[in-house]
Length: 590
View 1: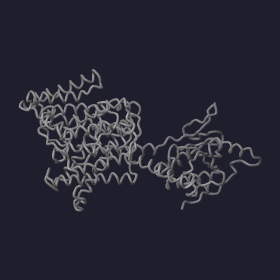
View 2: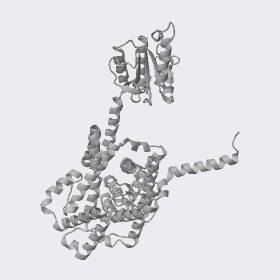
View 3: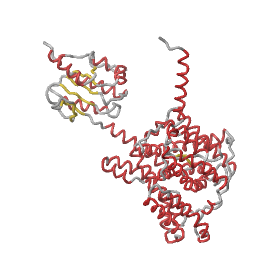
View 4: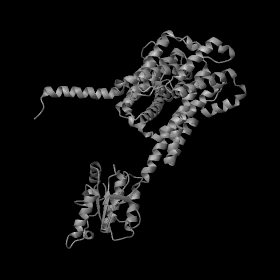
């Protein structure tokens, strides 16, 4: 009986609302634990104290007015906290995207000018639209090409890169290098000229943070150190002693509005927006996924694309530049005890207050103090324990993690990530190209167990149960022919070959042609070929390829045990042997 129309309507509406909620919102924001509210709020305050000076620096990298760096921690940060997937990822200004933006806009407008700001907002808008379009096209899976091994190497490389970048400010020297290695070389050459006062500030901050950690890791050591550095700088006039301070920061709220859209400018910036889209997707997903794994929490790439897209649209509307998921800011919150998006919302609230009332004290913040705090956070990103664990259990994957880390340090985040994705794909292809195939035999207790594919190997006299260890595709299909040749080369006369397809999730066209040749080869030798444990979609593929017709009737079995029983039944039939059964020859593929 059909359901009444009056019942179906509310159900459809409820289903639509649930799908919309899943598409837009993260349930984690709605389930903030009460016992963690204080810790999350404190972590948000800590992020504000450490992140505000950092984003001011990123604004300078991007060629934007300094105050626009604060804007990235306002509406964009709140937009991702509400709409993003990760409970831990912090979105804000980022060095990689800021550098890409500055390089693109250098020949289009004067840095810091109103035209420059407009173009930066347009680039952020385009990046946001690309992220939202990627969500609609379900392209979030692209982030899945970063394996756990690559994530460990990626974050470790970012940690090393960021730590090296802080050394000049900690020592009070200048560095003109554009890469991590060139900065390290410049810093080494400048060691005779270090400023003792700057070094003293850096050492004092590091000691304060480490002591706080030793007493209780829940203590906001970084926040205490920053506040103390501002107080000492003001009281002792550290600027007069040669220590660089942040300097005046203008206050005021952003004026919301859509960047003036010019099709010519949009066309010129589309390539830049696409480059930033790739960096945002890869870097944010890598960071968010690593923390999801760390805390055993779900992570949805599609939902994350919505959050990241909305954050960049919010950046465009609030007069600032492109934003990205930040490994260092995320680590700041994590180290301070933040475990939900409440930390990001707290940071946005603090930035709002700072913009209105408290930009004055920031002028006294010593740059060496900020650099020292960021240096410690960067060191924490280097997952030495994770790298040692990978080396102990998977030395080959350790080389991939190490390659990723070195690539990020030497080539930069964006190029390093591209190389990391390529390395992950190559590693996957290496495993699938050389699968762990086996011959299944019965243990004394009657259970199936794998044995090596050796010349003349048999499951029992006259029969082999052969398991192919992964999906069949053009690159590994030759292994099937090689194994069949190995099995029939010697040993007792072979009458049946049972292919256990439990691990086969797909068979491409090229592999199907190879499989058809293998079937024909066995049939020429009067060996029956049957299949067990095959997934229905793969069975449908064999039907379309014409292989099922070539195998003949009764060639598919649910389990190897069922196929084995059929072999025994055929062997016991009077006057017949399985060897006399000659299925029709394999049909050529269309």
